[in-house]
Image (tube, rainbow, N blue to C red; front, top):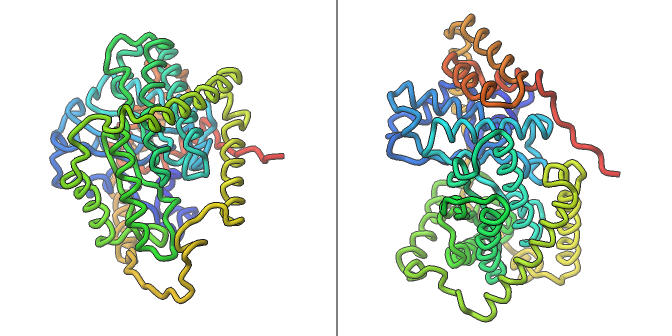
Length: 446
């Protein structure tokens, strides 16, 4: 969690958070440990990082190049979707405009120097986890994508230079047919936008390549083995809807970071669907179904209504600054909870088919104090042994580039790679950016 907020693990703000949410990365030394022995020219690395995406990516590039892998050969995906942080997940660092500048810097750098890398995964997942409807998830995700496309075009990139490397990330909930319709509508809408609004000529620019994760928010701490069934249904909906990539949640995630056993079972769910169900043998297997086609049309119609309203507000950045998507999501979450509390919605084990004598104990992952100690020792060693003058020069270079106008001449990525190579820490790099850009404080709703 501290890494997601741009802090080093020994920062007082990070106390008690080590190992609670993913991997802690404080410096290039940690990245070197993570990547040790991996054939980085033959694997694709997915990095779920947003506000500090640029410095973490810089560490990855630096670690790879130190091992002799040229950046042009590296393949992977950054989540790097800052707008959904302001809308839903709230793991933001800097104000909206400089945050957008950093995203565009990464898109531009990847377009110029790393053609195999997906520099952004435009994410509806966290919008849905915050309580949105399926339609809102799709509408706000596509609106975020439109904002990134338009920012990159303003930077001087041609749409067909960068659009083929855009990717998306959606949630899959338990309303089986609604989710399938959502995925089918997504591809239609994106194709229309790219061909009609942005005049893309490369067919790959019009493809909505998307990853799907099953719905973490749907998992219950009560009767946790029921989550295996939920995840299987949600995963199957994603496959029938046309996802190109899939993550299945572990059954114990309502309790903790997944145990090894739970993670393996989640993987086996995907493998059973892929190897035994036969659903991968045809494209769009439910295409032509009256119900699915009708539902897809209705989802698309409702999404366009949202997109038209966002256009009226001046685009997604202006809409976020006005609090529009945030309010829509909050209202939807409130309605859902009211229906749940009233018994109008049923969740097995939570408010339906409850077992008052439930006493099931499941094994949970515990991150040892020894892991934290090793991380802190490595961080202290980095600070002790690095060239302090080189670190100071690199951070000064980052400050100069960050303070310059958003353009190819002042793209911050080269400076961040210099900082990573000098073993400047994540907290130091983000500290420089905080000093230049300021920190974002969400307005209090009235």
